[in-house]
Image (cartoon, rainbow, N blue to C red; front, side, top):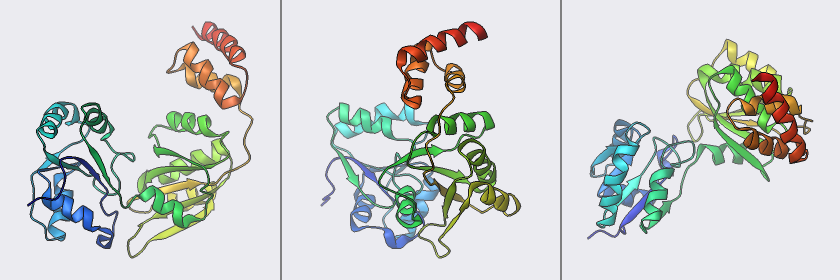
Length: 277
């Protein structure tokens, strides 16, 4: 008889070490009517490694989510027991999934948390960067301009900034950190929970050069330690924001970033908009 209650179970999976599998996760994977996963091959390997009975696996990612969601919600409304996992770590942390959680909650379906590993919190717990306040930026954008825009938007925050990155792109991202935020201390956490787990700490420019010559493998968590809050250039902030936002939206966000009066930001945004057409 199944003891897993009907509903959507958002379940964290190991980020490297199978010893982190909880009894709750094992039970959920074995008793689910369906498992939603990013890559059925990855989740299939996990289930096989745990020696569990393989339940139906459904690929749920950005390309299939909109089509599948109504069917999944209908299955849940009929009393289904569905488990949502990512390839590794906690779902919805820089992974798809929040829309199905939202739809399930809106439909009155019970959503359960099966807590467990997360690369973000694992890195924060061992790096020695301040953790009383931090912002998570997800994966750093690929394009240089978008990277710089994102970093400028957070440069006034006196807190640890965290983002995910891959080996081939880590050098360029750290170079952007040094250019936009200054040569702050950075911690790069990789191979978390695995045999060769390590945290590499240094100045952003130094680590950028180091990784340019020897790119690390895999994905990693980058923690930018807090620096002195910078005085932001209003015109630069508004120019960046106006590229994708209306004058009203840009001026509101600029006021929050710079600490200037919203009416002053709005007036300057109008001037810039007229100048650039």
